[in-house]
Length: 184
Image (tube, rainbow, N blue to C red; front, top):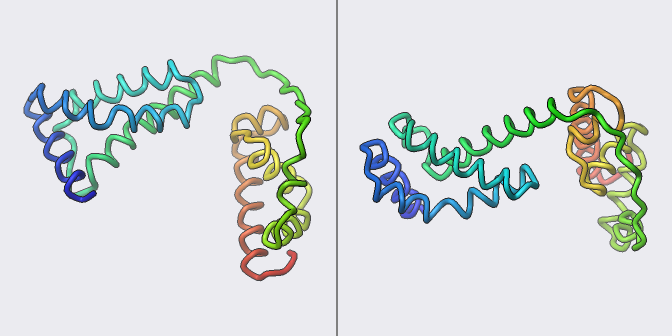
């Protein structure tokens, strides 16, 4: 892995010298990985593809700014992409009107019922039920229903910062409880 990382560092340096062959090689090696990251963040294939394209355009224009002493090229590219993806989601969030998310019933066994099948799961459930009600609700919605912080804020009609605090405090309390091995 370090050899490949060093190789990517060299390719980015060569891009700073306008080496098109290095740029093509870098794109071949990293575009699929970056697409996967973008898709995980945005959950939108076309937006993810656009973000990868924009990230490589930014790389080509700003490769001179890459400093291998501050981190690897692989991490630098992922960071460029991540910031672009977050900005795109923020822009999209401002453009969308707030909507009420429907409660969708799951016909299968509920996630909590599946979770209770092991001793560790029982301990987690005990700690989860010991949380304050709002923390319990946001943690369940985030991790069992897969809602993002933004989706939670819309669904709960609460400010995004407040929702993030609830989730963070809930996770800290869960960690503390699990580390202690007893209910909060």
